[in-house]
Length: 464
Image (cartoon, rainbow, N blue to C red; front, side, top):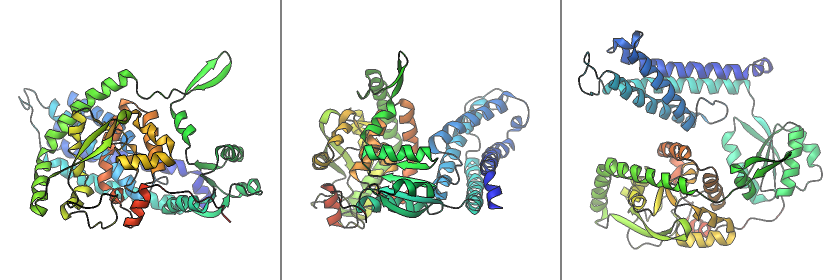
């Protein structure tokens, strides 16, 4: 029975996807049609509102991700669909209010039934949870976890990748791990569904990937520097020879110009909108320990230029300066709240206005960290090809204690894939961080934090 259902797996997922998207749209449209009868008749209002909902919905699903059951964990899917739904609702709602601004309805622009948006979203949230949890339950009833083989080079590497894979126990089951030097590797690979290749030298990794491709195996690899550079490659034909052109010059003049314009506009809007939040936070900081509201620290941005980054103070005064740990006693009570919701980052929009930072870009690291990381990872300095940013790949996908190497890969991926559309996506994806409790996860101890600042030495012992 399972085997037969697995043949229809894609069809089942497609049906659930259609049902979920339709119900999310229907809830908004039908509830607002109660007071807006024109939505139920062939009219310009109905056409514009529907078209706005479909276009906005498509864009926000592209930004946040859609109903991809079986591929992601349940909570991230719920969060993604919920954010896409609420953003789409707001766009369609504004368009509905615009269409109702006429002689027959409102002579001036008016927000109609804004309270109904909350009712719509609550109803949509219930539907989203039902279709996601039900869909995941059915999917994993008919789909067993993939039997996985981990190929790596050291015990440290094995621990790193295993920790991540084990979080997806419904998708993957680690059946075996092996060193890439094992003589029987090629006879072992065909026995497994999915192959994870982690921290294997490029030459050997290429051979293993080609063998996996030959045997039609799913393969996951951790990117090396060459892989990141190839993200922006262009296919070029010289006569009848195919080549990839790798142009890694950073942002063009045009890209920097439009990025700067968008930075100015977004930072002004952000500072105006968040000013009440900053004021409340400032008062709370003062009442908590009567210390200064703002915190300044030297950081590096494009070209290695040093600047003072502005933040709301979250730590006590006159304490040692090292990376945060779990239940860090240096962090104030107010500071924990500010860090949890990233409110302490808001003053960095002042740095953006001054041209020292961008809204989107690599995280501005402490100068000591840059020195330490670059000693172990010379490629770390490539991050300085663009301005540091408030948000970005590493800030959204990574955690506070994500390794320098993994943060570096995320930052370099951003630089190589840069576009205004990517900036737009990452700005909206930043809202996801609010719902990720582990995004501000600190180190287990002070010793671990200080060890991290000096980076870590990879264990060279082979897996036995």
